[in-house]
Every structure is written in C-alpha cells, then in structure tokens.
Length: 156
Image (cartoon, rainbow, N blue to C red):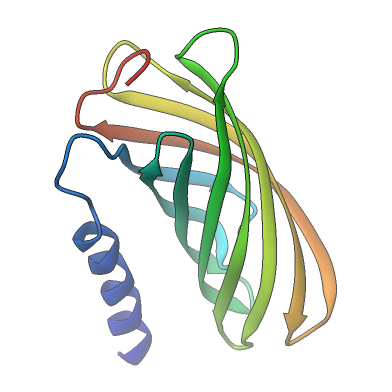
C-alpha cells in the first residue's frame, strides 16, 4: 500500500507541475527503454527557457527496483536542420525504490521530432553512474512518444 501511495503521489506531482502559460513547452507521454525502475515509464518535459527544460521520468516494474524516478535538466536543446527536428543533452539525479534503494547521476543525449500535430517522438541514450546500493555504471537507450501541450507542431 505504501509503495502504491508513493507512485500515485509522484504521478500527481507530474500533473501539478504543468505550467499554465503558453510560453513554457510541456509534454507528457510514455518512454520505453532501460530506466532506473524498469523498462516502461511516464515521461514529462517541462520547458524552463527557450533552450532548456526539465525531463522527468517515473518508471515501473524492473526486477529488484519496482519504481524509479529520473529528473534530468536538459541544458542544451537546439534545432537541427529546422525547428521540428531537435537535439538535446542533459544530466541529473535518479532514484530507485523496491527491494534495493538506488541513487545515482544520469546523463542523456537525444534526438526529437515534433510533428505538425501535437505529438513528439524522441530517442535518447542515458548513461548513468550508480552510487548507492551498488557502485557501477549502467546505460540504456529509450524511445519516447509524448503529447505536446500548448500547441505543438513544427517550431512550437
């Protein structure tokens, strides 16, 4: 019951953190790939500037860790041959909860495409260094599909 409450609280925080102004780009969707807490996650992007954003993922169902949170700051977010196709790089902490507790730092490097309708897709690589429960290096690729709030389409 306690783990379920934690999961629901994190999901509620994602939606509560959505900005209300059209200036800040916000996207919510799903991420498939290797993550702290499993291979499926709720993925959110919250714009904090023209070329920076917070990229958060809550993931579920991964072996010894049943729930994970990645909170990355994408400090580079630039157009690549037009405003619909972008690349990004970022870094931030991750936490894993379950049979073992995990704490570490992750980076990401990815490519994103925004369609003419409010959907974006992206692929990224996330290398990470785990400090707590074990000390090791982990890495994985992911694929994201997100709904774009406040417009969408090329250049939005």
